[in-house]
Structure formats: C-alpha cells, structure tokens
Image (tube, rainbow, N blue to C red; front, side, top):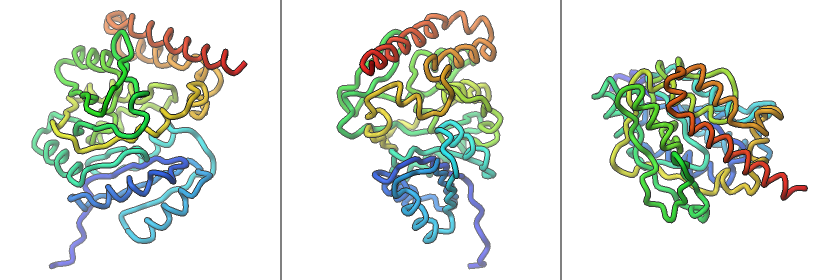
Length: 294
C-alpha cells in the first residue's frame, strides 16, 4: 500500500432535530455502506434530547463524520440547504433521521450515475415501515391515496422533456426523489434561498432542468413512518418550520407564486387545477385544526 489518501466521492448530509430514537440506526446504515470514500455531515438544529451526545460519540470514532450543532433552531429548510452548500464532492445526498439504507444503496446508485452522465439524480425504490403506514398519504393529481401496506410504488422516475417532467412532479407529489444521490454542481445551482413549504418540490423542479431523475428497480431504502407524520396537528407541523405567520397559515401560496415565476405562464396554466387543489385542501386541514383547538 502506498498510503495515498482516497478522496471522498460523495457527501452525505444528515439534518437532525431530536432524533435520539432513530438516528443511531440511520448512521449505522451509512457506516455499513460498501462504498467507504464518503464524508458524513450531521447538522443538528439545536436538539433538546440526547441527539448531541449520540452524534459526538460517532464523530469521535470515525474521521469521516463531522457533527455541527447549531446554536438556534431555524427549521428544516435552512438545515437541509446548509448541508448541500457545504458539499465539495462530486455527489451529494440527503438522508432523513427516520430513514436507513441497504448497504449497497450508495454503490449501486453511484454506479448508475457514473455510467449515465445525462442523469442528474438516482435513488432506489423505497419501502415504508412502522405503525403509521395506514396514515401515510401520497398526494395525487386530484386526491390523496391512502397507503394500505408498504409495497406501493412510492418513487417514480422523472424523465422526458422538461414539460413532461413538470407533469410527473405535479401529478405524483410525494417527492421521495428529493432524497436521490445528486450531482453536486447541478444541485447547488438548483438551491433556492427563499424558505417556504414545498421547498423540496421547487428544488426538484429546478434540478430536472439539467437532466432526468432515475429510480433503480429494487428496494435499497427504508422510511420510518414514525417521523413528522405522526404529529397529530398539521398546523403544529407547519409552525416547526419557523416561516412566519403568513407562510404558516397560507403555506402553499409562496410555492404557487414561485411556480408562476419560474415555470412560465404556459406550464403554470396547464397545472392550475393542481395549485388550486393544493391551496384549498390545505386551507381545509388548517381550518379543521384551528376548530379543534378552539
């Protein structure tokens, strides 16, 4: 051996907040990857549980891990964005503190990306687990589809012309593709500095300008349904994002305005019913929460 240092090819961004129940499982799945030349950045949005102690222990044991503890809770959007901006490797991927990977998740997705330069992001199919599966909803074009078990196809490839890809995003709006392994350069150009609900949708709509998003036809990722979906109040979930009162009580109006500005009038009009439905459905949910509260 010549002792030459192998540079990391991928940065893994793990945003966390009060993740003590699941973050060990997430980190262990990362450390078990067959691709070892990665770096893991954990960004803690000022947890109040034992998450800091857990992460410090991992950081001490593995030089590939960097743990950042923020001095103020700023919400998930700023936490996610800061991680992507820190990447200086060829590839970048986010992983939720509720998720974990098969040991070949990175290797198989990177192999596909390395041999398909026109693809900007790749992910495997995902399996759901946990007692809240029946409460999970995939938002379709005109309705919410209740998941009865962990087997439905919850990730779809986004490919074709830009107009076709916009339709794919709009008609199947559970954007697990956001957790693809991305080419860092294209992802960083696609980041949005504004903060609003559906920020992840907007990022997806930006990055598909540079190429397609692929899905491997095998399950290599697992999502725990005990995450934010287990919170009973929709309005309380929105409040955790630290977006201010308007973006909390009218959460999809900023996203609607962003789409009008960035997708072009023609594409916006094509999907007008989607935006109408999105805003009206959410208004009903918020009103229902407020009525229960008062």
